[in-house]
Length: 73
Image 1: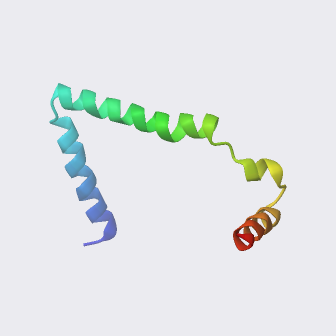
Image 2: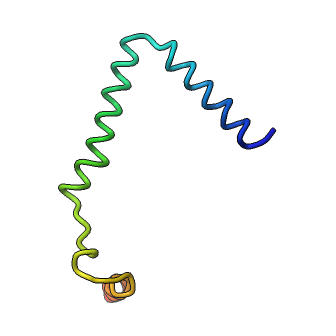
């Protein structure tokens, strides 16, 4: 079997499971997906800014900064 065929069978299996799910199960999955969206997208944007990207213009300066702080401790 090819990789694409296996992937298609797995996808159809889960799609069929979600189609036959009860209303209560669908509501629970919607709540789970909303919570994951809030955790990974909203919280990351507002509470975990990319400080290194703001402080240093390029990757080499960022890596030097990290290397110095890791080796000094």
